[in-house]
Length: 135
Length: 236
Image (tube, each protein chain N blue to C red):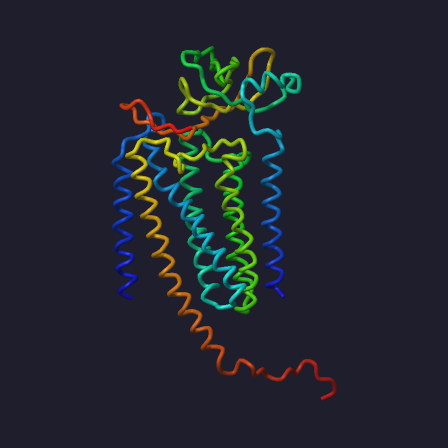
């Protein structure tokens, strides 16, 4: 009898975890992140303060420290967005890295509080130009 | 067993060589020393996928042939698969904490699907503990083992099908997005982990066979005889 009970409990725990993981991931926004051109396109559905994640590459030379905050520009190759980061950036934050920033539109700029490095699949050795990129 | 000893000796050599290569290749310009972790993280998870594939084969073969050797194969492969998935998850978390800036993100499909796969196969092992009759245990495990394998392509292709934080594949059939020396180190480690999988399986299956034999022997005498029940007698 106790073994069958264990089975149901175990199955229930697994099912609950799956549902929880699914809900947690969809909870915030349906789309995991927007690229700059999409964030600009959907500006109507993303009013000031509506949190979402912005993905893009840090434009080289755009990083500037403004009092306690960091200002830089992200791009997806065509569109650019000015970003202000209110918290500390991750350790590997620098020019030309892909980033993922959580925050919201505030007027013409994106104000974020959490930034991650969204590392791509490329590996490079410093002395050589780069890796064999095959798309 | 001499065979196992030779197998493990070769495996230890291969793993040490792989680790040495992982240590001696140049670092990635952005990640620094953390780029070396790919040599544990990727081989572990590739072998976990293989292990769960082997479990699916064992499960289906049990359902068709009903020979316990397939059930033993399926079970042993889940154990190794869970081990390798765990190693992959932990190395991934350390790498993510260092490179992404965060050790986990539930919104990422690759991470979530891998975690679910891990939990489902741990559930497989728990399921086996909950059933004492060997035949029923094999039956129920086989159904789960045959179905759960669908998670493998789901996990692997999640980075291609969905928007993810986790990057897409660096090693692909049409080429690699890494310098050649890094590719070599990675493939050597895949080979070493494959030997590790084979060695673990060989050892575990040897144990399973012995355990099955003991269980069989125990069932010979006295099993069909039960003491008389005294609790359902009326007026004695």
